[in-house]
Length: 265
Length: 354
Image 1: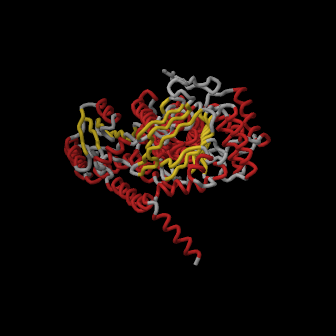
Image 2 (image 1 turned 135 degrees about the vertical axis):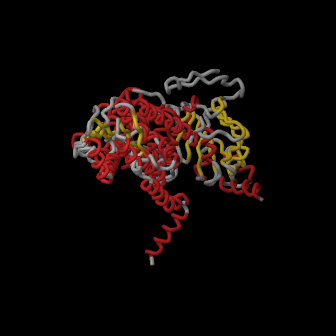
Image 3 (image 1 turned 45 degrees about the horizontal axis):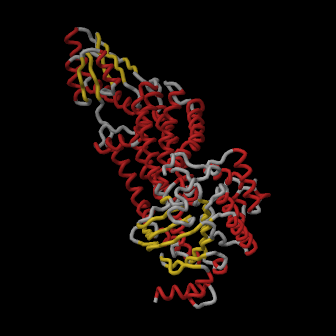
C-alpha cells in the first residue's frame, strides 16, 4: 500500500494495511532478528519480539542492557544493522507510522522556556493537530496527568515529578495506538507511580498497546508479558507467572537471576 | 588541599577532551601564523598608470611602482575601476593630475608616498631638464592635483573597514546565537524527542532558519542603523541595498552556526570553532590587503563566505554601487546558505535515519 507524502494527522488515523491478514492476530510490533551495532560495539544481538494489540509488554533489564536502543529501533530512530522491525506491519524506520506512536523518552525532553501548555501545543502541532481541537486535547491530557492548574507555569519551575507527568501527557497528546515508554516511572514517588499505572491500564482497556522499559521488579509484575534483556539479548520471555514458574523462583528478580545465570554460566 | 583537588579534577577533565587541548595550543599558533602572513606581505609597490607622461618620468617611477603606460584617460579610468591599477597620473602642459582609486586608505597612502618620493628624489633632474628644454625656470611637474575616484578626501580608516566590521559582527553574533541554541536542543534531548514525531529533518532545519531568521533580521537592522546613523559611517550606496546584503550574510552565518553545532558536544566545543572558522574569515575577508600574500591565502579567501559579503558591502558602501552590480557575490552568499542548510539536514541523520 502506498502512502502519500502528507503525514497522517492524529484525527486521520493510519489505516493498517493487511491487518489481520499476515499475522492472523492483531500484531502491532514485530521485531525479527534485530541486531543493532554502533561502530564495533554490538548493542542488540539477534533480538526477536512480538507485541499484540492491547497488551502491556515490559522490557526488563539493567541499565546498559540495550532497552533504550530496542525502544528507539521500534520508534524508528535507528535503522537496524541487521533484521527487521515492523510496526503496524510497516517496516521501520517510517515517518508515517511514527504518527501513531506515543513516545516518552528516558530523559524529560521538554522546552524549559515554554509553559506546559505551550509544550503540549507544540507537539500537538507536530502531529498535525491545530486550533480548538489541539487546545481541547491539551487540556484533556493535562487533566489526565493532574497538571491542570500548572498549564501556564514555565517548565523550568517544574519539579522532577511534574516534568515526568508532562512528558507522559505529551506522549498521549495525539491519541496514539501504540505507546512506548522508556523508564516512565524513574524518580517519581510511589503515589504518582500508582497513578501512572492506573492510567496505563485504562489505556490498555481502550485497546492501546504499551511497551514499557523498567528496571523496577515490582513494576514488572504488572505487565502482561515480560522480556528479560541482558547484554543485548532477550534471555527470557513470557508472562510474569510463566517466568517465575519455569525458573522455579517466586519472584521476577529471582527469575531474572536464574535466566541471566544460565546464559552467563 | 581541596583547592588542589579541584585543580586536579579540572586537569583530568580537560585531558579527557582531546579536541579542547589541541585547540588550546594550535588555535593561537594558527591565528598568529595567519596574521604573520598577512602583515608581512603588504604591498610594496602600487600599480600606477601613466597617461602621456614624459619618458624620463616613466623610468623614474618604474623603480618605485609597477608602471603601465596607457593611451588615453578613458583606459586609465577603466583600469582603475576594474582594480587593475591603484592610481593614474595624467600630464597635460606642465601639470600632472593624479587620480587615486581611494577605497582603501592604506593603498591611498602608499600611492601618495611613492609619488612624493619619486618627485623629491628626482627634483634636481626634473628642474634641470625643464630649464633646458623650455628655457623657463619652471619644474616639469608643478604641485600635482590629487583627486579620488571613490571615497571622500578625508576618508578615515574606520570608514573603509566599517563595511567589513559590520559584516563581520553580524556574521559572528548570528553564528554564536544560532549555534548555541541549536546545540541546546541537542543537549536537552528535545531534538531526539521531536525526531520521534513525524517531523521531517528538513522541517526542523528550515524551521530553525525561519524562527531565528526573524530575530537575526531585527538584530541586523539594529546594527546597521547604529553604524550608518549613529556612528555616521560613510555609506555611498543605498541603505536598503546594504540591508539586503547583510541579511543574506546573516542567513549564511545562521545556517553555518546550526551546522557546526552538529559537531560540538557542548558550548565549549562550539566556541572552539571561532579561532578555526571565524577568525581566518575576518583576516582574509579584505581588512588586510592580500595582493602580495601567498596564493593559498587568496584561494582560501575565495572559499570563505564572509569574503563575498565583505566584497558586496564594500562595493555598495564605499564605491556607491547598486545591488545589481554586486549580484555575483550576493548569489554566492545565497548559495552558501543553501549549502549549509542542506548539509545540516544530512547531519541530522545522526539522530534519525529517515
